[in-house]
Image (cartoon, rainbow, N blue to C red; front, top):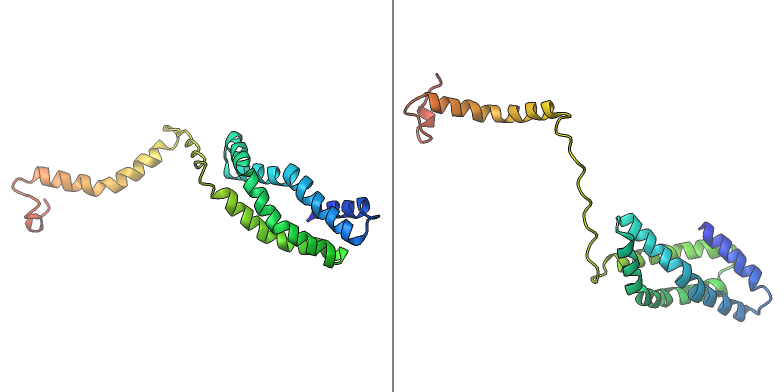
Length: 174
């Protein structure tokens, strides 16, 4: 929201001497053909890749491969939204209107960028190295506790002649 407050104030200042229809066209054109391709789309892909833990090279390649399609979808959504915003919405309500539109747009763009079939998923990070000395006695004690009944049964069967699994119910402990 803070960036919208800044950029819309800047738009009002820069395009203040234009007629209403020309100001709407100028603001919409600037936002869709200067701001979005040079700042918004690249920063969105880089941020999404960073959040997913992808290597930067994979994120940049995804951006290069999906850039044109992302811009086409962006223009299909944002040109009409911004025409409505700059033509009919009063200036104090423009930022809230755009934030509402942006909520839906981020869902669309996140889905678009995350489900690209051209790119493999980012590799899983390597597991943390395990210190086998630290905490080993706790692990061994825990394992021994679970293995104790098996050890007792094994000892029982090996020390009592004639017992087999088939007559286990008939055997009595020594």
